[in-house]
Every structure is written in C-alpha cells, then in structure tokens.
Length: 315
Ligand SMILES: [Zn+2]
Image (tube, rainbow, N blue to C red; front, side, top):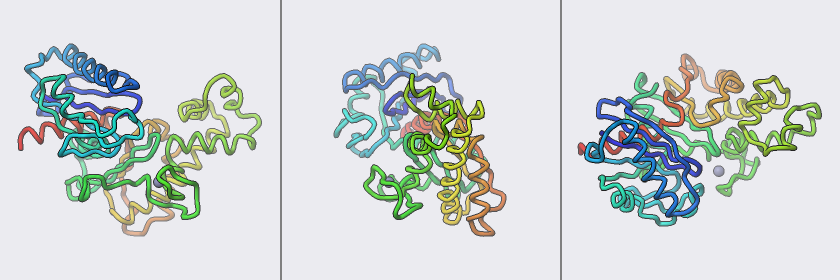
C-alpha cells in the first residue's frame, strides 16, 4: 500500500493505492500559503486517506511526492517552485518522512502524470504516446516504446516552452512565442481580455463586473453559446494544433493524451487541434492518432507519484 501526493500551488491531491493498482481512496486539500501550513495540510491529507481507506499507518509502506518546480530528487529537495514560493531548497522528503514515519520519494509532477497515465490510464494501451497537461502553464510527457522519456536531468518534455512564434507573446521563461502563452488556461484569460472589445454583447462582460475572469468562467459561457468564449477556445485550439503537429512530426505517436484543468473544456478546442494536426503534420505521421483525455483527471499525477514510490521500494 502506497500513498501518492501531487503538491501544486492551490491543492494537494492524494491517493492511496495498492501494488496491483487498485485506488483505495482519493482526496484533495488546499496547499496553504506557508511552510508550516503546507506541512499541516500534507499530514491532514495523509490522515484523510487512511481514514477513508481504513488502512492504518503501519499499512502504508511508502509515500511518493510529485512536486511542481525545479527539484533534486536524489537530495529530496524542492529547489524553487513558482507556484509554491515558500519552498526554497526545501527538504520535502526529509520533512515528510519525519511527519509521517514513512519512506518518502520525490519526483517532478509532470513525470508523475506520465507514470500515472502509463500505469493505470489510457497510456497503458499504447507503446508510443505524448501527453500535454493544460493548466496555468503547459506541461508534457512522452512515452517511447513503453518507457517514459525524462531526459538527462529528469526534466525533459517542456512542451509548453517550445516556440510557435519567434516574435510572439512574451513568456514568463523570458523567451517569446512559447506554446503555453497560446494554449494554457492563462492564455484563455489573456486572449479573452484582448478580444473582449470586439464582442460588446458577450455575457462575459457582465460577469466580470462581479467576479474575476478565469478560464472556468470562459468555459461556462462557452457552454451557454457565448460567441466570444467559443471564439477564444477555437483560437487556442488553432495554436495547440500547431504545437501538437510539431510534436507529431517528432514523435510519430499512436496517441495524444490531454490532461490538466483546461482539458475539461476539450469539446470546444479538440476538433480544432485535430484539424490543425491534419493540416500541418506530415503524411505518414498524422494518420490514426488516438486523441483522448487522462483517465483519472486531476489525480493522474498523484497516482503516478504512488507508482514512483512503489517502484523505488521494489528496487
Ligand atoms: Zn516559455
């Protein structure tokens, strides 16, 4: 029995899984806003998982942590994390081992999402596939001949920072025209702002007088048929189609799996992605690609973190 925790800027998602891949419980708690608070919430998450699954502390053999940001998995530290800024050279493995009494392992959250999808999700049906996680930014992953490719330092597949317009929008990484400026939840918000004056009748205008503009809000208005919302999702689908066509030309994948919060709005941009790949990718590469979503939604990386702990225990 292992626990997997996916620690993001807003929430900590946790699962407790047995070695055959049966998920015994899952839960989500807020991350908090300071070192001590986050530690308390991690402990709370572990306790809830044990209560829900009726598995005692002694029944849990290891904990896997998936963390955003730059990590040193051998030292067990988070070096910096843009979404968890109170973790600077933070010894997460040592702290969680101390708090939980369990052997703990650390891996990058994007890799965890790939491990989770490969173990229990749609990824298990294919040998060669790519995954894009569409959230605040864009993460990625690739499995080649059944093996996740993670690069020399374990931080490859930064699909979000591949350039689709060399003179384009300024990215927070300092470069211009990165895919995540065009196809993430942040891009949905920014494009809505920059196009709103062209849609004076949009219901979004009324809503943002009372509440803040989010990708979720744009999605809700797309469901009601708002022309601006539909235009924005079509636009990001067009850009994602360019980025994914590039990936198709590199990886020749059998499947393209979308995850992350924004993938919940897939019906409004997936057709445009597929059309983009059909137009832009090479013949012999673009045919018969299976397009789908991650099987466990927001829990994919937590499941992968559990798998990572399990594999390390068995080594
Ligand atoms: Zn970038």
